[in-house]
Amino acid sequence: RASFVDPLKLLPALMRYDEMRTMSGASVMSVEREAHVEAAHHEAHQGIRFLEHCVGTWRTQQPSIHNYLIMLHACHSEMDTLLRSLRGTSPNLVY
Image (tube, rainbow, N blue to C red; front, side, top):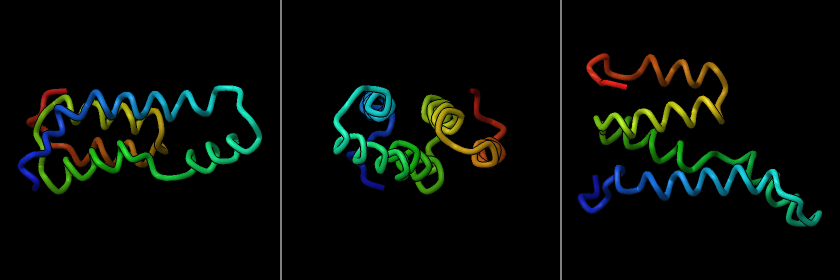
């Protein structure tokens, strides 16, 4: 784990990323930009990928990280992915 990376301090940036990603699909745009945005929506959500890494590999125990990851799964993932994420969490964490 890189000691200079604090996932908790990155939460505001991850929230902005998600907001921009969500808003870009809802705005009126040119055909060319619309195709680019549509392709981006089919790509993996980078915030989910990063937070999954924090929880899975780094074993981050901060409730804010877990809560935001679950919220992202609820908004952007299939139900089975959300349930798998919930089952994989520690029962000792407070959400």
